View 1 (tube, one colour):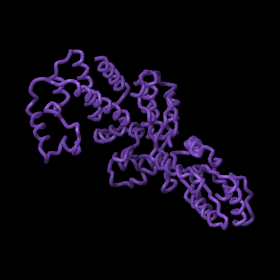
View 2 (cartoon, rainbow, N blue to C red):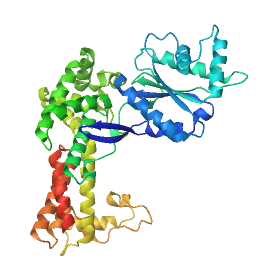
View 3 (cartoon, helix red, strand yellow):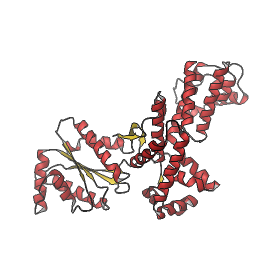
View 4 (tube, rainbow, N blue to C red):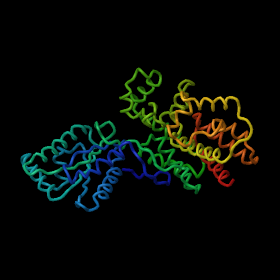
Length: 424
């Protein structure tokens, strides 16, 4: 399930770690079978309503009227006496004098009409106990002589439950390079930057988006940077003193503090499955101005917008590959290039060869396929303007690959290079 998020005038679907597994759970149509209690984790209470709306649309879309299922949403706060009472109220069933009477009343309603209950538990502290109560109610209804299926999707805050479908931190599907129109590309760029700076938290990103929209005009990347600095500093100041102290301790001595606690407090994250743990981008941004040289080296990488940099590198590599495919250099390659070609022919070679499976039809043709892009350009007979454009591409690719900052100027440079190469 993707969640539609609007930031900086650009609406984009976001994908979350829980998107695919939750889709798989929904695709089994639990409301038509044995029901169940699914737990969806969100970053904050403000994220619960839009996620619940998206789930409701998904349920109706999947069911397509086949079972006439109905979705019912309810917000649970600390005043709720019991989860049984919450379910009874949501289904408009009288709470009986005994548990068995209540179960029979609920079962009669659930057998007559299929429901999916969307319960917002982000406002209560004892979410695990509430989930246990819902599991118990589901099991008791299934054990009746004439059983009934209870289907519940419970939304909890980050850290509120184990085994939850994770919708706390997501990533927009759109990329600024997807759009030809510069206005749309800029809005998508800002959307991407906000999503990354806020570590994929939709509610924080929406709040920051309001400030950006007020202060930043189109293609004014300097104003965007200043605004992000101010927002990061304000949110760092509002973070609890103990959480700030624990993170600063970890930055100085990583083995001295519980990683699990820092992740649970939302000061450390892992943006990808293969990514190392790091401070959240907005936290790193807030700490950078006052950091010493050693700490700055650790924080710089946490701020760089990885999705933007990856998109830029991918586009650069594609443009380079297409140029290499259409232009063959003249003359003799450098000695080290010829040596690389000889190593590639060895059955025991690793390096580039390991990336070609047996039977691959696209193996290198000659030594020029082992040359660096700079050597390839230098040995090719090309118009001066095209040579300059290809060097711009090479520099941009190397800049991104070496871990430098990715910004709107990077996007604009690639757009200009792409236009030039397309016209050649």
